[in-house]
Length: 63
Image (cartoon, rainbow, N blue to C red; front, side, top):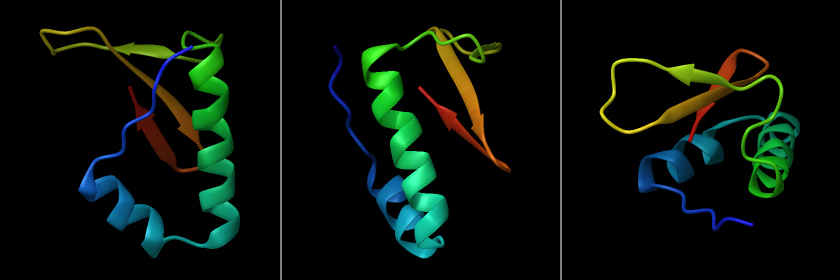
């Protein structure tokens, strides 16, 4: 199990979104906490560290 840390920018962005979309995003983040490499995760190229992304609607979660 992993810890979740939100940046100030992420918190500000989540506060600006619709509550139903925020709940979908937070639910997906909680699932990633227990299963970090899910079947729909993709590797993001161009970074020195290993970075993954997963989509929630029109948005992407980078972790």
